[in-house]
Length: 565
Image (tube, rainbow, N blue to C red; front, side, top):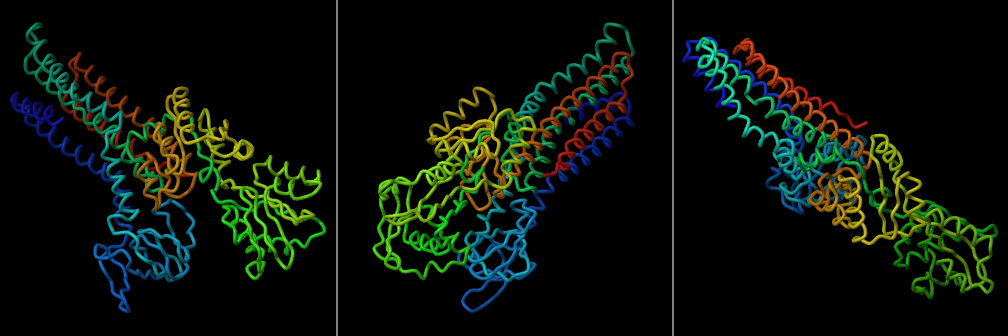
């Protein structure tokens, strides 16, 4: 770019066009200044990220409280965060209760309540309560520091279209020089034209051939899109991933913790007519308290919600019946909690048919059913399930409306549960009872079919499938190093709702990059055609170059207007 300009200015001086040469220099300087201003505006979102975490914090060591620079804060220090203050370091709440605005990190618009043992992040804003936080990470390891570092790396990385432009520019400059030389030399040598006029035309061709607009066409769009995404709680780890996401045709989802909450809850409690519902639930919770079963916490939580004093009940002769359930004595009676198979063995006539029908209905809805009773009768049924995320259904619907051809749910869970959840959220394909290697094989199959496929998971147990997909998207990047490191895109809040926004932004970025490249080359071609009748002047050349640069820059900045709706 600078080579072409330098030759043009020296040439203008050589043929006595001093005023035109000076104008080229001034307009080129203005163009460069506007270009750097636009790029600065695009990078502003990163500067805002850098400024959001405070530089110092109030720390308590022993009985003394004093303000310390963040660089000097140690892991294990107790940080005191007053109402309305920003949190300076990542840590765990050890005292206090407050609502914390995490929008800067996760993009969540609603403040999140933080109590003892909850994690808080540097750069987030404390609400009304006083919090005491035990620092868990050094200043360079905080989530905000990692986001800034990753976004800076992402913005510096060459995207495929940018790499193409760079390769193109390598051949483009010598070609323009040869064209300009031809314009300056051929008409006077072979057609007896005026040397001054055609040298001037050749110099104008050099200026118009400057690849300013072409060179800036891609990076300004990439930088703007990645910055905008970071502001909305989506970390895109490079221009390549932004472009690939824009071309995605199919998306695969892990079930547990992605389409569902990942936490089992009691969905149905059905005591039989002749029983005391609260007493039976308290007995179940008291028995489960001694159990190691993964669903025990869901039952205890249900009892706590009902405010039942299950912890006061005394359990005698507690026994775990491997693979079937548990039993124990309460107030002289032996109670069993377990699978329907357990009661088929215990009861002389097995489970009555009407209760069996209820159990089958619940199982068909993807729920795990537990039966509660004694050696002679059934007292209640309990159904536990992993709840579907509130926005999973609307997200899948939005993705289909945005033109995604296929959404697939991949899970290791049984077919009944998988079908129930898959049908509820509205995915177009369900694959159940898969091992990690099966998920990997299915992603490869999808890639063969659609070429570009995204996989959404939690970034830990889905690592092979995330790696095999074109774009790996991790849920809940805030606070989880694995998600930040393994995925190409991390949704910082554990919010699936950011997925349609990411897709829209990526597609818009792809469109703008194509528009910019086409426009940059088109305007050069039109200006160069003015050489044929001899109408091209240095003024037209510099305005064509500068105007094109400004237009592609402003077009790239339109990506700041893409909102998360």
